[in-house]
Image (cartoon, rainbow, N blue to C red):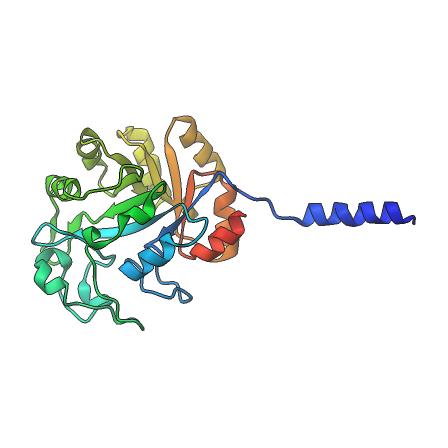
Length: 264
């Protein structure tokens, strides 16, 4: 076999083995750096995790879980009850700011709970911010009032070049937020739930959908309607790559570093 022919075969093999990249798919951190991921340096939904995620090259934005205190302040927190992850008890919605600011996570770094207003949102200039609103106060067995949520969000000074999305689990709230000028994504955790949202034609800018319940055909059908699709809940490189292959607007990954590697 001649040298030129051999070189050509080697080059062909190298090209064919190269993984496909997905430059048009945004990579977003779930809870900033990921939920329940062992290799994350900081606890999810903390100032430390936010600063780390927004400082990583290639990151297109972060998703954070937020809840309302009795003072009407927006706090970063994922779980329904405080005792699950912190040194406190009860729920965010049944406590005043003065008490919440004394709480810390049971994690290695004992990060403090933080309000949305305490984050340096200028770190997200030119990027996306997803606010996943908690709609239910488990301690009181009652739903939040969307008007209270709107008033709290309106009080935050967001940089003008942030692409802000409000993520809702109650589709009936969507119109209220859109009337206020916000972009809204409706969340779906099950196939039937997504089908119901699409069949009822709720007013929305798009959907935040669990990776396991949506395929490439679904993604393209939704995007053909002029709606955005963001996919969440993926950790392993294999599941991240499968999510990227579906052609959504973005993936909201629990392993931010792995997602950046797989996209490129």
